[in-house]
Length: 220
Image 1 (tube, rainbow, N blue to C red):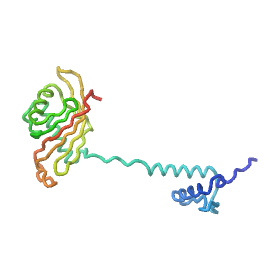
Image 2: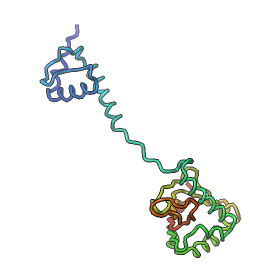
Image 3: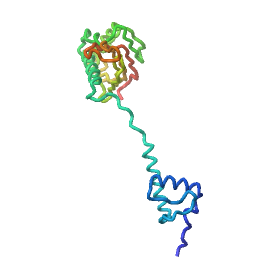
Image 4: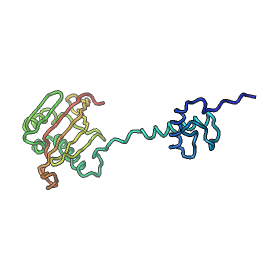
């Protein structure tokens, strides 16, 4: 016959038992292993290593669930959001005009004093310069494609909105045929109808006042 093992309670110091007892009592009210003094509780059932391991496993799982990270805050990139719909539509109209080489329409999207920050070309200031650059570098040479699911839109209180996304530039024609470039962008849109921290004119003219175009390279 195997010699019975000694009581589990004798293998742990009273302080450790008190810690275990407090945690097990809180998470498993029906189980009380020991009293605060470290003595065995009369209601204790079988003080076996199996019971101890099960209790510790339950505590571990409870701790893991408690410390699980909270979901990140979602952007306004939901199709039903009115602001997202507005900016997404403006984005499409702008680049549709670029594809058609309709430079008058392209010009209507930019503020007179717009600032365009490009990680390769530096800073360009003014609508006229930006429209000329678009005409010389994009019109009839590339086709812009917004990466699906990359668009984010956030409100700017009393001003307009900020648009963030990733787009690709396809080369379907002779110049650099087949090359696909990619870049990240930030557009700051101002609505002329926004006054006194509220939307006074829903049909107010939207214009881009700031652009940051960065991380240019081959499509990932």
